Image (cartoon, rainbow, N blue to C red; front, side, top):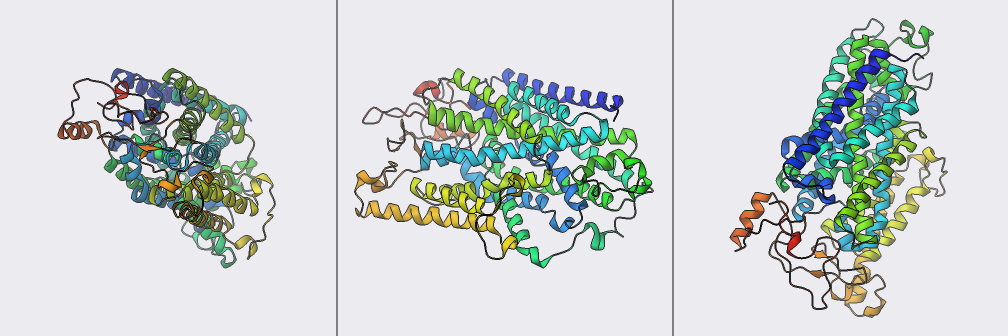
Length: 591
């Protein structure tokens, strides 16, 4: 297949535009004096307003996997719109996240999603929970990079591997330069490109002579049919998307970078609406593909084969753009797909790198790491995560299966842990037991994408919602074991020296409102500072501080967890290492 030179030039121009915007955002950040420390890269100085926040949140979910996978599901025989759950499933997850998680997480001023888990469960258990979070981000990144490779191959004739690698390198470039600032501002442009590009393409494809009326082919066609024998699978997948879409660093990175807790909630609700709206053109494209007489097109020289018969249903969106729209319009649609991939790939890569740098390297491996060291670790992690996502994108085939798989371990393992830490009182014993049991139950159902056969015979066979079952059992386990073990220590049935994980259960245990001291072997102690957490914008913090008799005349910087001068030292002289800096030179960053 010959390379389409005009199309190649258009995609190069688009990539250069995105890189320029990313670099401009990084320059703007430095001009404002935001600095280049690791925390600024992760949460953009908590300076993301509602407008940019809504765009970056929506663009993060509306990726290449989202628009390609939605079109693929609607088009594929046996699925159809009835089984296209991801758009409304992830929209529901954004609403639920805004209702139950966004406000408490932002008010506590955490830097990553794993911060409360490490505070409550200990650094090392937090490091273990990093694994499902990492897998989710990598699978998501791989899905959307794979989608772009397919699109560039169909429309431009570019080699799939080269397309994926070049796209990953472009996203890597501006993410390293500007962190979340660059990612957020490029998302604004990318979302406009997605919206305009797809909606321009749809009318041309609908009016193509080879396409029958999609209203006539809807019944028993692209709308799909309900199979009562698969009800359990449908429910399982729906719940996975709704609740498994919450505990993602890529989501909480936007929540925690918001300039206030109220805005953190609002951007979740608005982005939910945006996800539904942005899925509509992909649904229409899938319906168009189903309604097309491919014998009247140049697809495989009009030999009568359909994309599904050729095993290319995962590429139905770029195929529709290529064969059912004018060349110029297909290039515009290509820009939309490229924008979708960029907007999600950069976000997921940055999120995974943030989790590793903060919650593994700094808090579990080297608590004494300097800011300069953390910056280099962050940059190295971004490179490594990009390489891993690219390798996965080139080795796994189905976009939609990969899209579901990206939420599996997050749903079964991470969601119960985060829910309990934010709203109940778990401990490390319950957390570890729930992790192990949830993992076994999930893997026991098998995984076709990795050729893993089931080794647990669930009732009902394949129709049994084993993922939801595994999540519920994991949730019950963490609560029962946590409260049971705590009762044994509080009632003195077990002596205090049996507390092998040093949870301090005999004296109440850890809380998410405490700093971590040194290592898991040292129980946490509460801070005595008046403004122990950054709960809102800089202006609100300043007002609160003055109200409580403080003085901000020093002009020093604050971290996310420490908004006033250094707290009194502990009795043993143990410093607050891990979640904040020492003393006054780590004070007042947002001001």
